[in-house]
Structures are given as C-alpha cells and as structure tokens.
Amino acid sequence: MLPRWHIFWGLILSIFIWFFHPEIKIIYLLLVFLSSFLIDFDHYLVAVKNTKSLSLQKAFNYFALLGKNELNRKKKKRKKDPLMIFHTAEFHLLVLAVGFLEEAFLFIFLGMFFHSLLDIIWLIKNDRLHKREYFLINWLRN
Image (cartoon, rainbow, N blue to C red; front, top):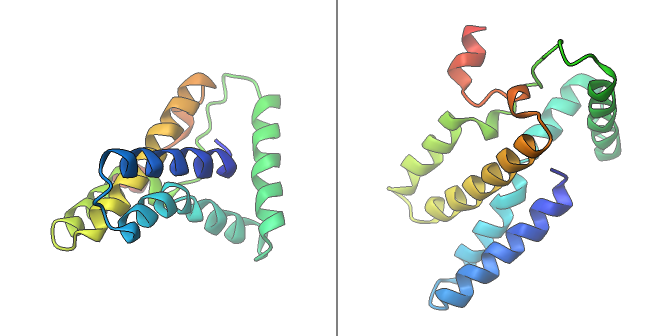
C-alpha cells in the first residue's frame, strides 16, 4: 500500500478515536496518526542500503522498480521481499511491551498495528501475502 493511503487511513482512524473518546490527549492521537505511516521508515532504510543513496525519490523509484520486476516474473518464483524490520511481529510485541511501561507506546502500537492490518489486507487482495516475512526469527533462520 502506498504511503498516501496509510496517511489517509491513519487520519481517519485518529478522527474515529477522537470522535468516540474526545477525552484522549491530542498527543496520543498524534502518535496514532504518525505511527500509522512512519512505520514505513524501514522501507526507506532498505532502499538506502540497496541504492546507496539518501534520496527519498530514489527510494520511491527503487520500490516502484521492485514492484514492476515482480509483475514481470513468473509466479513460480516466489522470492520474498526485503525484510521490513518495523513490520515484524517481534517489533510490534516490543512496542506493545514498552507500552505497558509507558502509555504513549500503546498508542504507537495501535497505529503500527493498524498499518500492518492495512498492509495485510492489501497483500491478500494483490496475491502477495507470501512475499513478506512477518517474523524476524524466520528471517534469521533462513
């Protein structure tokens, strides 16, 4: 899913939460909103590593090319996408665990979880669920 859609749906989620719980601190709503799309910073890190450039445009181009190359490959070659560390279950659990110590991280977790849920829906819809590694431990074993 493109970042603009994560931004859009993150805003909708934040407004929804505020509508039903207007007593929530604005900073917590902002954390939900920001974490609903800034989790994709790991995509940028992968692009920087692979392109050897800090350019955000080159990062977008890298993933656009990666997507086009995937469409041109035969379906038999089910190569995994690069590891997105912030999208792994272990990272989510770490943020959730810290959330029990510091309340703000529960709202960060909520935004991240919402982002991942949107990603999974998009991956299923586009027959790409098999392309992503969801567990760091599996990636380390392979």
